[in-house]
Length: 408
Ligand SMILES: *Cc1c(COP(=O)(O)O)cnc(C)c1O
Image 1 (cartoon, rainbow, N blue to C red):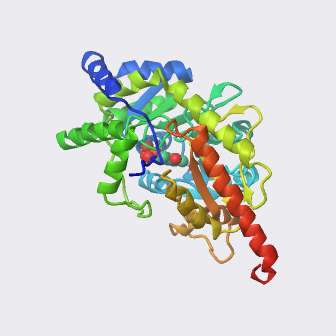
Image 2: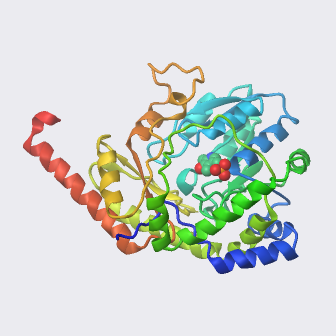
Image 3: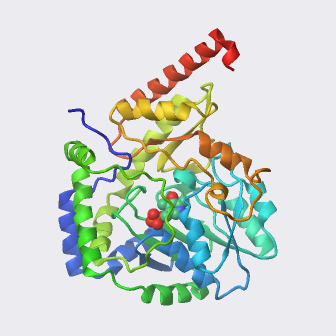
């Protein structure tokens, strides 16, 4: 039996689960809260059941301090952001992404911020830091708020300052696929007392998860710990039905973060930097090995940043290649999941004219993107295997085209 490597690998070991349980029994939730406050150097910190709930609560809070209604998000991002914006009674407005940085295009943000813009919600996609200085400049000039989406970039720094801490408010996710996970969870940080006041009220009114939810979280945390062992993961993978990531959710549930998860978060966070360093090393290795290769684009890295890669993104010039490589890499036992094949404006009707695509880069991007795992269960040997699959595959493709130019 070939052992499989999962697409998201957050090693939550059994000793850590037990330690986390003990912490949660003996100490209140604020132990993890203090750790996050120290890490981010922020005055206020709140937890929720997910990143999307965190975003929703922030939006509801800032509605109290402004009458404006538009929220700017990238045209290629996590689709549930749209649901959170609408649920908060606000309007999602998209901006295009850059094919150089793979993040929101600064010029496009400038274009789409108007009198009615409430906030820009920049995301550090795949852990790659977006230029926060440029965004804060726009926000200051136009008197807008910045809600910094650091859900996939916990650990990434710019000028040694953690992503999530640059905006008026920032938020993180502790979901399974993120850089640091307690299975699920979200965290909000800010220094702004006027906003914190409303966030605090919203968080305090979140219902506690029911007994079934709590048992479910506990069982899944144990499953996550098992999944850190390839043998168990392989067995589970073969037993469980494959859920495709393609169903769009219409709503999300909001409830309080559990004490058990906060205990695990506190216990694991002490080791978070080892995990972040591995992700950084893996991403930099891929970036070095794949730079300058014909047929693909990889992101330009921010010169003053240390990116904790959540995944390593590759864009194939030829969009038919993405599925081919997905299959070839999955065949080696390293599981990669296909990211969304569509940008936001093609998933939801937000009133845009699709014939004259207003966000062509986001469309181009979504059709050609493949994500290589950088999590701590990967290693240089496995990454080298992926690099060689990509290099030889692209050379073969190029040779085919030289031999059969009519196919071009
Ligand atoms: C994961 C993610 C979210 C949502 O976080 P959850 O904890 O899964 O709700 C939001 N935005 C981006 C960019 C993400 O990557």
